[in-house]
Length: 451
Ligand code: PMP
Image (cartoon, rainbow, N blue to C red):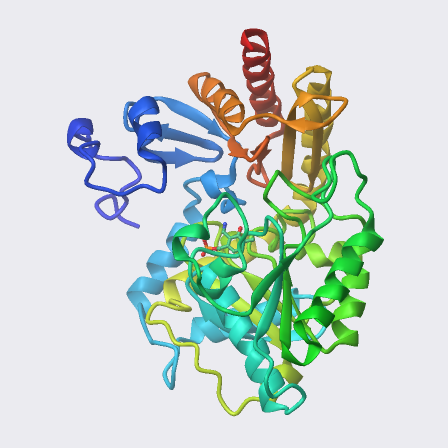
């Protein structure tokens, strides 16, 4: 790449002009007024620089858990650049780019078991929407369930920001402005660590949650229920790792009622939990898997939905057309990202470095404010509590205080309900993990002292 095309060195920026509200960020306005907008200009590895020249250690995976590989990865930028020069567009119908076929073949190798036919989208939301469509179309086309249209999701789920996936989302009041939304979507409670969704203080009792799912299928009418969707590890409330016996039995229940099981691996897919796909932790093969984020490590927008050949074969055609779905530059980014994962053993590295991360975070449990530190692979959460005996969650404002204190000290972490969430790049040096946790420790201590 020539010097003129390489814009890694950001041009000087007129901060006043940028902050004059020409953009509509998804943040409450009073927060922007109080904290100022965070305008980022350049990054390298786990470090990112803002418009005022301040540098931060980013332990959130490029803010939205997308970047498994950190900022400024030359090999991926080069792959995107080369693809844009060679063939920047081909569409999704009769004409398609070779690189998209290549990526689909690669996904067939990487996804669990018999999952091997892919349709690409440009986001996780549209991948989930495609999964809902696919489940309905399959069951109707085969005649097994000609009227099936309903989808069952879970309390606190996040599946996307529009349409069916938004209706299947149950987090932070995000759904409210779009209600009544897509019909036929209902929710069941999910097992959570530390705090039960059902009764304060109750343990994660797998049987109860499985019973809720089975009863909901019966209640909605099994002949009308097309799919059940779940994040293998739920983000809301901070990295909610289910009990080991939950998903294998979910699989059985879905099979029993011919309900297609959709695993939403948009966050967990491509190594975040130390496996290529998180469902492999429990040797469970879903009927459909959706992906996004770490497939391109944030270097280009891409989503995908992959299923078994038999599900695809039942359909004469599957119309899921978006102008920018499966963009060749994004497919090239994904192939380059996967090559990095494979060449440098980064999925295994995420697992091993994740153990270090969790061990260090557990030391924070000495704070009265910290109820539990938990994690899997390179994804961890520090759950804050106002009352350890009751495991009462702290107010979101307090979590925000911790996040802001950390930010003042040059560390970016994410607030998620009552928890602070971390999702570092897979190949971050361990010293940088230690450095970040040191800062988080100080931030928690400060907020605790002032409470
Ligand atoms: N599913 C999950 C589990 C997610 O975390 C997200 C994004 N946070 C989505 C779906 C939606 O993906 P996107 O924002 O790319 O539409």
